[in-house]
Length: 249
Image 1 (cartoon, one colour):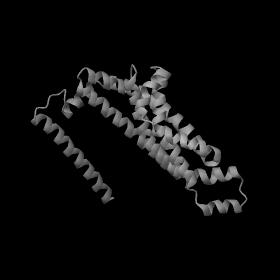
Image 2: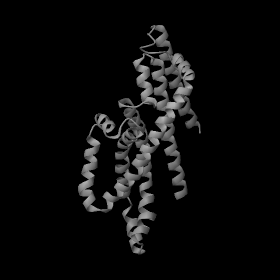
Image 3: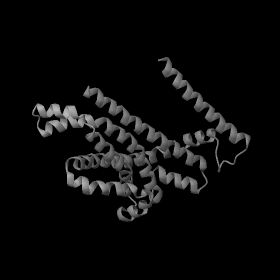
Image 4: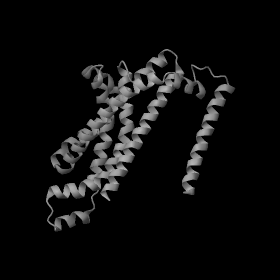
């Protein structure tokens, strides 16, 4: 308990020091607001534009949720296919690794050409960013099933489906949750990149508009909202993961 309080106090002190450094530095050196606004100016702008930020956040959140959901369903299915089917391991797995090696920011304009400026292109970008970590970590989780437990299930004459559902799925869950925690912030980045390339709304579009019109404080406000959104979704995944493990126990 004392250790937890100490760590929280250290983190709080670091944040306070950072705030003082930023605010004090901007005021002391009289930095132009269009270059780097003070934290108080950013806070004031965030409050003033709260309705606008909320509206754009909902758009980005919808894109992230859809892209992450598709990445989860297809990623888990593909990982299971690669794990259980040798032909898929020899053919699909190298393709997935090659797909991950492609710079996805470079793909964004092509995705917009294929899918248009609507929701589909942003969801596709979120999917592409989140897909690979889920495939790889789920695959690793399925492969990490303890050998002695597999022997135990075989000795009991368990059917393949029972072994999969009662042994391999619980063994793979921690790795899957870790992969989902990595994939969720990447899905947010993917959606923002998609909005940068072509969109009429969303936080990425708001950042572009604010930067183009020298509203740097609004750009920082949108960036703070993006960061908060990523953190909230990350800790939501972590909380759901703990709930699943608790039920497994």
